[in-house]
Image 1 (cartoon, rainbow, N blue to C red):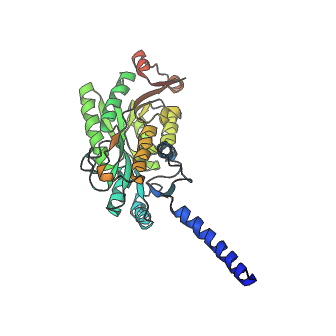
Image 2: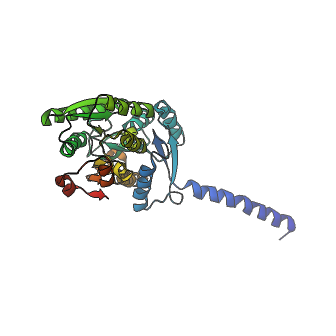
Image 3: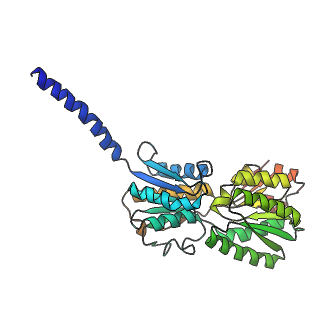
Length: 327
């Protein structure tokens, strides 16, 4: 072989290798993650999503790539972030919570959207039906409004002398907030407890809520099922401790982080199921034909250390039903 031909061959090989590498990389499916929150607020969700994907054979960075888009509670940014993921032509978009799901739905009618929400996706206007969602949306759901009503009963069992309980809802998540408020008010009338409906959609408004609870001498606080409020667990734990307000949250992360008590669905199980739904789409199934799955796990978690700090005695009936007691 002549010297010039040999150099040309080497140059061709050097050029072909990066091309081959890029082609191999492009073969890895890319999914989008459209969040109203931040990496910190969604850490548990993302961890569970990765777990579900891994269970189905997809490992981030090896067999699947995830493009993250964070609105950081600036919800007006969601349409732009959704449009960015559409432009990337991702294989699917994961949307935690109804607000980001609706933003994704408005941005595309062709790219599959896989949601994780609390409550009934049909009532929230996300899908036509649970068994056959239709369109380009499917996903997973956990317990919703009915959990808040039951949570009020749990608080009443814990604090039978408290005649007034605050109910914290996010007005920016209007559909879910309205459903929960209706059920909680009904439950309050049934058990003879006055429910004070409070609203917060920012960190500052959450601070104001606790100050108002003290002013009105409200005996306890019930936190609704909501993406934003779920993402503020650390803030809620700190405020409940500072103002000595017995508080019930829907996530076990609340008592695990130092809060008093939680009653609700499992965030980890819901987003693990979301990951499994995404995997089905990556393997060729259409979202219209993939039934929405519901996490059936309900967890009652009690932190005895926090109860002691508040001077509360947990009734034996609650302790007996608890799934986890933190001592």
